[in-house]
Length: 222
Image (cartoon, rainbow, N blue to C red; front, side, top):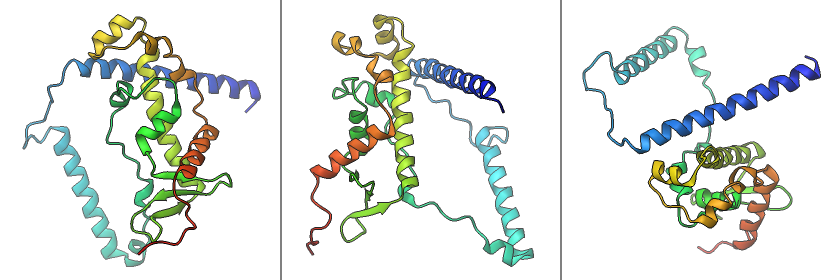
């Protein structure tokens, strides 16, 4: 593939991503004004929940059949991803966007909100995740696992910024979301999508947290 085609393809994908984010903002805005849950009726065979249950049962039966007919093949299972990299935030982007401590000016603030002091790293690119089951209370993680934490936080931050980026007027934004925004916060809203959210910025935050916590080489207290 020639360089011109690669550039055009990259630009098209970027526009597509921004369009999807804008569509999500519209959907979230509509949902904010309509909080009535649309639950499917239990027992309805045409409902999405019933269909998913049927599919899961069929897959379960297929797995059982494979294990009976070919025990060696059944033994080859996909390695289980450790729980520490299964990143599911309990908060929604709107919870942080309208949080009193969010000044709309820092990716580090978003990281503090999501992870607190559960991640740390030094300037030699060693990184740890809090794990109370270990002797020191910290488990060393790989670069790949750390990148998953970074990508999850960056996506969360991007969702927050997208909610504001496409708002044309402060008054309509406040009306749509039901929150009052101080003028000084509104004036610096561009920092949300123009601020530094790079991996280098993420590592600086890790080092800051690491330096604020007790050293890991200290003897543990039993």
